[in-house]
Image: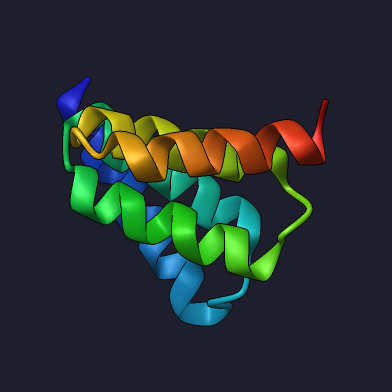
Length: 88
């Protein structure tokens, strides 16, 4: 599975070189980084995704999960609240 994640990350990064504003690529890239345990990169991907598509509740939910995994409960709670507001 690790090789699959590495390949997925490589392809998402290539796609983002072509169009850095593809929120679905950023979202999936964040998921791949999270599965690998690379929380700082996952956080950066989900942040960028939520900036590009602020209506996407899932990006805020995943952002909250990554903050939680990084033991940052304040930011986790803040982003869980944002996700709940966007998709009650």
